[in-house]
Image 1 (tube, rainbow, N blue to C red):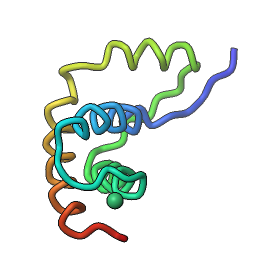
Image 2 (cartoon, rainbow, N blue to C red):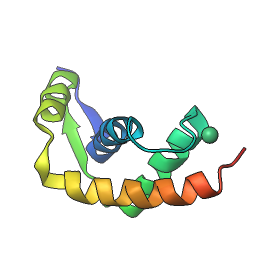
Image 3 (cartoon, protein in one colour):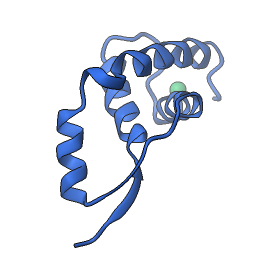
Length: 88
Ligand SMILES: [Zn+2]
């Protein structure tokens, strides 16, 4: 069984960001999307897990309330800053 080391917070942020980009204004190009993701991730505590690919998938399916509120708050801030100063 192949174990992988992942910062699961990274997956959570990308999932939440993609949901939020659906209703947020501003540029949604790959550069801005990833700038928002990295800004957000630098401000959140990482959450590393040693897991298998399959286990990771089921953890992602269960992802819901636990971190979501704080992730959404950080994304909202990151989005405000990056859409004001896009790097392009
Ligand atoms: Zn952009």
